[in-house]
Image (cartoon, rainbow, N blue to C red):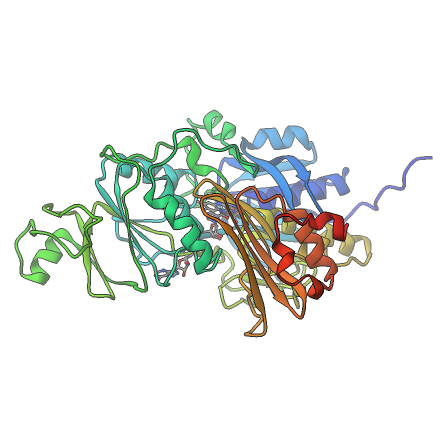
Length: 502
Ligand SMILES: Cc1cc2nc3c(=O)[nH]c(=O)nc-3n(C[C@H](O)[C@H](O)[C@H](O)COP(=O)(O)OP(=O)(O)OC[C@H]3O[C@@H](n4cnc5c(N)ncnc54)[C@H](O)[C@@H]3O)c2cc1C
Ligand SMILES: NC(=O)C1=CN([C@@H]2O[C@H](COP(=O)(O)OP(=O)(O)OC[C@H]3O[C@@H](n4cnc5c(N)ncnc54)[C@H](O)[C@@H]3O)[C@@H](O)[C@H]2O)C=CC1
C-alpha cells in the first residue's frame, strides 16, 4: 500500500543561512515534503553539510562536517534550491524577505539560521582579529606567519585551541578568570591541562574520536569571489588542522598567562609613544621570565587592567559571539534574549508569527531540562536545525510535537590540548547553588574525571582523556540513579560501573 503523502502546502518553506543549522533544517524539510520547494538563502557560496552522522549513545553524537558547493546540496535534494545572496530585510507582516540581488521571496514558514559573529573587544582596529569563518581563519594564519608575539584575549573555546596550536610565536594570554578554560571546566581540570602547555608538543598526536571538519567545497570554490563580507559560516572542530599555525620562531610553546584581568586600552605604536612620553624601543615591558626580554618596538600595545602592558604583532579577540540579527531583522518585533539572540520557545518558534530560528542566532527560552543548557556549539546547531524543521512540519500538518530528546541532556565531545574532552549535564555545577558535591579522579598526564553530585544523584561530569565512561555516566544522569550507597567507590577504577547499572 502506498504511504500517505503529506498534504501539499501553500507557499514555501524558506531557510536563511548555509551553516550547520540552516542546512540541516533545509534537508529535513526536503525529506518531509518531497514535493515541496525548499528555498535556502545564504550569503556565502559554500554551505556546511553534516556527513557520516552516528548516534554513539542516547545523546552523544559524532559526525563529520564538510564545506560543500551549493550544487552538491541541490544534487542530493532536488527540491532544495540554494540562492546565494545576503538577506537585507525581513518584512514579517508581509511574510517576505528581500535579498541583496533585488529579489523578494514570500514564505509560509521561515527559519532564521544566520549564525553569529565574533564579539570583539574593539571594533575597527586592524590589529584586533576575530576568528569565525574560513576567511578570518586564513587572515589569522597570514598574520601569524610574520609574527613573533600575539596576544590572545578570552578564555573560551577559541582561546584554548589557539594557545595550544600556535607554534613558533610567543603568546600572551589574558583571561578574566583565575584559571584557564572557564567556559568548559573548573580550576582542577585547568591545572590538569596546564602542564600540557608548558611541555614540548609530542611529535605524534594521539588518535582522537570526535567530529571532523573538511573543506572540500572551499577548495572547489576557491576561485569564487564570495562578496559575502564577513558572513561566512562558522568554523568548527579541527578547523586549525588544515592551517599552518606557525610564527617566525623555532619553538613549540611559549605561553605566558595573565589571569584576572581585562583589556584597559589598546594603543597603536605611535599613540603609545606619545601617551607614555617614551621613546621606542623600550628596554622591556612588564612580563615574567617566561617571556623573552623585550627590546622590540611593537605595532600595537595592550594595557591590561592589572596595569601591565604588552607589545605584540596583533591581538586575537576570542571573546564570544553576538547573534547575527542586525541589520536585516530591524523593524520586526522580535523578543531578544540577554545575549542578543532571537528568543525561541520549545517549538523553536520566535516571537514573530511563522518565523522559527535555530543555531547560534537563537536563544533557547523554554524551561530547560535540569541537565541541559544552551551553548553555541556545532552539535546544538545541528540538533536545533533538525528539530526546527520537525516543528515547522508539525505546524503545517496540524500535528503536535514534543521537545526533542537531545535537549534532555547537555553532551559535548571535543578536544583540548590533544585530550578528548567530554562534558555532560551540569558539568560545572551550573545553577546548582552550593548544595552539591564534587568527586574527582585524576592521573596526571592521562585522565581527569570529575562528577557533580546532588542528593546522591549525578548531575554532570567532565571527562578528560580516554576514560570510556561517557555512556555509563550519560545513563546515570538521565536515569537519576540513586548512587548514595557507593560513596567514593563510584570513581574507583577497579569497579566496573556498567556491571552495576546496565
Ligand atoms: C573557530 C571556531 C571553532 C569552533 N569549534 C567548535 C567545536 O569544536 N565544536 C563545536 O561544537 N562547535 C564549535 N564551534 C561553534 C560552531 O561552529 C557553531 O556553533 C555552529 O557552526 C553554528 O552554526 P550556525 O548554522 O548556527 O551558524 P553559522 O555556521 O555561523 O552559519 C550562519 C550562516 O548564515 C549565513 N548568513 C548570515 N547572515 C546572513 C544574511 N543576512 N543573509 C543570508 N545569509 C546569512 C552565513 O553565510 C552562514 O552560512 C566553533 C566556532 C568557531 C568560530
Ligand atoms: N571545542 C569547542 O567546543 C569550541 C567551541 N567554540 C565555540 O565557538 C564560539 C566562539 O568561541 P569563543 O570566542 O572562544 O567564545 P566562548 O563563549 O567559548 O568564550 C568567550 C570567552 O571570552 C571571555 N570574555 C568575554 N568578554 C570578554 C572581555 N571583554 N574581555 C576578556 N574576556 C572576555 C569570556 O569570559 C569567555 O571566557 C563559542 O560559541 C564556542 O563555544 C570555539 C572553539 C572551540
